[in-house]
Image (tube, rainbow, N blue to C red; front, side, top):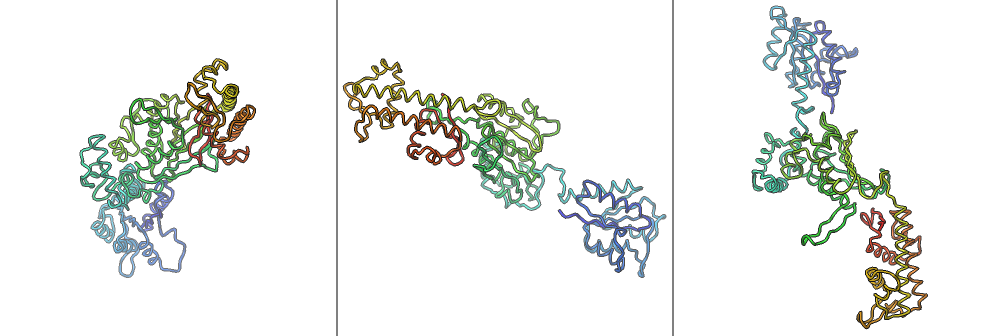
Length: 567
């Protein structure tokens, strides 16, 4: 903001020391110096213009008139009026903010015209007495701080409770308020119905006063909260590795009210981590289990949005790395609270209490200070490393992902070697089965098991996969039928050719796995270019390895990566 100009008016000879003190004080004070620019005649260089004209021009241009009245009336012009009184009259004429400070002398000690000026000033402004420079400095400080508070240049209330200077109730979305009431009534027995007057709801939540709405009201129910608070957004980024390195595969900036920000950020994380689908043994709906507990992810993001410093120009950042999730917010722990204490039972001290109350009523947060404890418990129950909390320039929450070693890197080499061995072992079993079928197309699965030493279950699985790949077909029933190799209109090939096809598939899969081992972000097109395989063939091999539990795709086709599973 532009500094407010303060014109210091007095008889120069009487208040020379006080004028210099105020000039130095308002210029050097760490707080007042940010908001005020003082003017005294002594600081003006020599000019050809008459001093009276300079004084009155400066009074007209100032924001605040600060008058010091004492015993002396000072120099009088042709009309018998002193410069001090002229300056005061000009401040009245132009409706300036006026602060008047009067020495503690009695009226008999003052010049009659000075006493009259003081009485005139009392009719339009409250004056304050001072006995010495210290009294004067304290009085001036109190007056200017009150001016800043009343004009909301500084706040004594929390940010969320401060009434917004520019927003009106028309900047709020009534539908959002009704939806909130509906949820809060069901979650916490909120004593209003959705059809209630929006102003009555806001008043109950202490979000409105004399038709003026608070900052919290805008963040909760605003049509466009970012119109008033540009940085009230969440930036989400996905990184393939362990550090912030460009290019960034997936980057989103989410805007909206606090409830929308939570939903969008949580969905970003869940869409970029691995998940598994449960069975229907507990009901019609199938449960989806994510590698990071949904409750822990949600709590970390909710805490960031509820407790951030909304006066900061920084935004909340949600960053998903290969080994961890980090949530940063421009906020600080309350006095006396430490990152260590967050893993113990502690008191809830909301930074933004008016924002926190509706979030509690909607079931988004709790009041007990159990949010961080819940994050720790959920991660432990999921078999993950303990989450980390840190207070630096930002407050940071770190959740560790699964399947990573202590040094933060996945033991991929052993996994790749074991998977390649698994692929080769399976194809050797298929090779044995094909050789036996070539020799005897009527052979049974039990006979194959006796000759090869494979289990019936393993044989059934291999035969099913070869059927799906078009290598094998059963003609007729299980009893009385026979096997046909490479049906699909290609005719029966000799044994050498069939075995060669199996070995070729083994080599293709091993090639694919080796390329993924070297670059887990490799695309199908790149695999095709480097192996000479067709896209269709690569898709088929990848699909089969996925079905066999050997390979998994983490994230989307654009921006995701491959993960090889050790069997």
